[in-house]
Image 1 (cartoon, chains in turn red, green):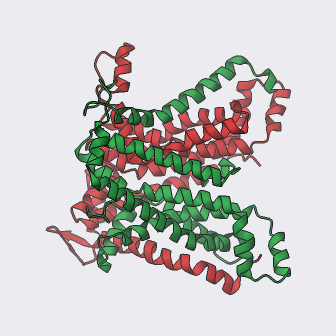
Image 2 (image 1 turned 90 degrees about the vertical axis):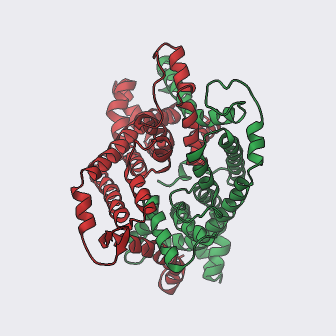
Length: 283
Length: 270
């Protein structure tokens, strides 16, 4: 069935109306505040670039931006390092469709449970007398409980866990599209399992790694619940700044910080897309 | 060649899977264990078992009300997003018009938009319209948040359809609406179920996008929990979380039964 003319207009009209009024307008109305003046606890409707200038010259905003980028980069790297072997094992080791479905559900089930619940789980695990510290003490790895909560470490660990499914999924998906005859050809030509992996499988699945990476990076960059609950005020990232500015009714500062957050996300997506275009593809 | 795969590699892959599944399930398992703890503080292992946190939870009706509110908001937002998103997906997949790819990118863009930015936007927008408190702003906001998930999954399911059936129906005199209603939608039933389930779960999990739209009396469940956790960290939250894990489990089992035979690789958006 072809969709064109008035039929296409009818199908698209509701979505266009809804997104224009509830997505474009609210974002615009908010971000315009970045060009207003904030003085003595009040927003003055006069056009100015002062808020942007203040953001760009303030050493504190550089600290926030670098903390945000560092957190996102570490979490992305860890999620890919843990996620790739898992996706590979799920694809290679699990043969029966039933076992594969069960394992896939287990790996993706955290997505079905609230971020607040998962963050709470890490709050218990990482406490001074929690499972992680108790186990490390018993094994003799550490002599004193290490502080894993209310600092960067705790946020990194739990955010990696929270974003892991987003790293596994695209890699698993690309592995499924891989032509098995490529592996057989490598094997017939005398390549061992490791050589086949490094020379054939890994390069061909890099697009999956890239898309998983970019999803993790943007989600980590905009994460709010985990840094707020596990950061203990020591992990000051962009979304928390947006939140705090809004609470203080400093919408201009919040809007400028939001633009910085958006710009970094878009930049990351753009950069990865550029790299991906040069990668070999499965097809 | 698989018959030749050496035992060492096989063991390594098995261990990877076991460790990975363990890591992923660990925070959920510990939450369930702590919900039966006899003490308020976090110590491993808990010194004793009790049901006191479940009793404590029952004495806090705010959580129950928030749960029902989240349930209603999730259902309403999912229904609205389906009503708007399914026609949009149909137009995007079957339509040939200029700017189609740009429109698709725009409609999917709320996925990558930082939720806190959207949340502040809606806060200012609804305040200016004078619609504060209540569930309407939350339903509308969640509709925008879940819309891309619906469009993405429904579109992916439409791409795989054979249009010969639709043409046959049209040749036999069926109108476009009949074709959509009787031919197209029944074929993507499992995709619709999966997209609706995902949309509901995403709505049910909103914190940043909604935190400025709630005023205590209209808190959603994740926000009620988030605010509670900022103040207290006793296992009341663990008891509630355990019930929520059971709830999510029941939903997923239900959806898998309805959408049997769905390839998992097609469930989540790429």
